[in-house]
Amino acid sequence: MYDRDLLILLNMIPQLGPVRIRNIASNIQSLSGFYKASKLELMNIPGITEKISNNIINYRGKINLNKELSKTKSMGACIITIADDDYPDVLKQIYDPPPVIYVLGNIQTLKQPGISIVGTRKPTPYGKKAAESLAQELACAKLNIVSGMARGIDSFAHWGAIKAGGLTTAVLGCGLDIVYPPENFKLYKKITEHGCAVTSFCLGKKPVAGNFPARNRIISGLSLGTLVVEAAEKSGSLITADFSLEQGREVFAIPGSIFSPYSKGTHKLIKQGAKLVEHIDDILE
Image (tube, rainbow, N blue to C red; front, side):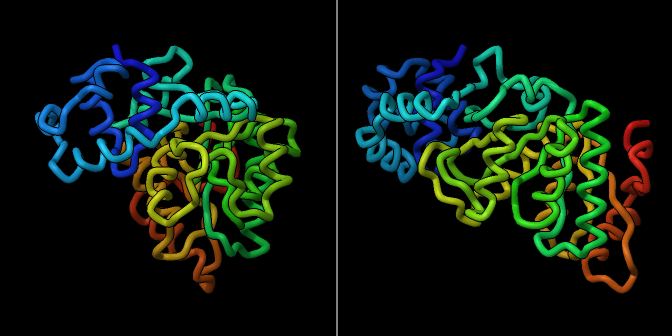
């Protein structure tokens, strides 16, 4: 069994992904043992090079775990580790699940069957309507609408669930104490009232580009399937769809205009075997 405080601390150290965190926690097993571990002892752990060992030793003396725990609690949020009973079963089933997640809102939301709805940040009126109305209907069917709270399709999907009085989960590419994009402040508040916000990043972590693949893995990991509404040929939404396939989940796509660049990605998915969606029954069945 992992030491949960050790997992939380390791998750705050840069350059340590899920595999290295679990390798360290499996070999050291206690927070006090981690602080005492020498450079050589760390380097004997699989995946820990001399450079990474130096990085760990540098950061472990600077990180204030008690401050992180206290600030998270004062926000009304909680930290769930893979060692905890509250960790979502559906996320635990993916390859290399995040060892630590932060949750703001109702954690019971994560126990509901989820479907992710993702798409371009620059949707057409058609895409906006499709994302919001389908999210609304799926939320009425008791599905948790999971998305990334990005501009565009993500935002319309969250709003659709909220308008239906249903559940929705925003997966963030930053700390819970940062609202990104900032214009979604009102949406963020509503999401945490109608569901929850989730992230694998510690407080204060800024939304840099390198964070979003990890965010997308969690979006698909919390979902039974991923619905792509509108996406360009090279789109982050297609990465989420790829993760969904990798995790053994369903992929759905909404067809669009042959003249729109934002249909190129969804049409590509359909050609590759994603299920074409015209109505929520295409998903529910």
